[in-house]
Length: 198
Image (cartoon, rainbow, N blue to C red; front, side, top):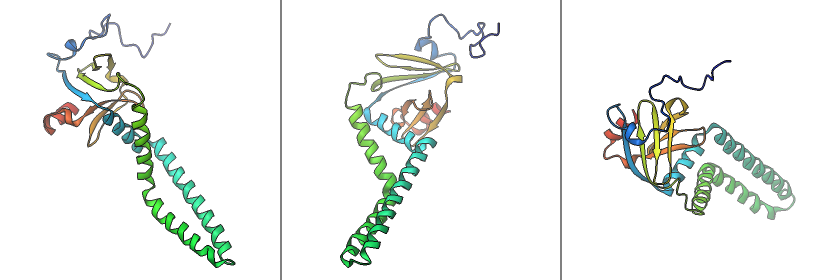
């Protein structure tokens, strides 16, 4: 019988019968931790960041932009063909052309604004105790520990998808669509932030 290739060897000294507590992650083993508060805006900023940087979501925005452009162009062509025989329709044709010139350059910003408003409403629907509030993120050579007053998760580094640094935070992706958010404001200096990132 083949052993599970995803299961670490049983001789690994970092394996324990129970998940390690934060005290085991921070200290002599080279780990560190940071305490901070996550607010609703942090989650909204992450969602917007992910929306702008996900290849799948960027493709959807491009397709939506192409669809809007196509609809405007078809509408403009129809109105112009009518305006040839009815001059009063030229005002409508000019209005459509102006709307096209105004909307297209700002399409991405309009989409971001709509998404931001929707996210703020969604996060406002519940208490979201597992997402918002005091947080401690601990790092050790073996684990990422994310704990709050209501939850604690321990993730092996091999399971981390990627780590992305933005102007607002460091995002430690634990899946392709979710991450542990550590805001830049949690650090007393940029040097401390860079140390944590490295």
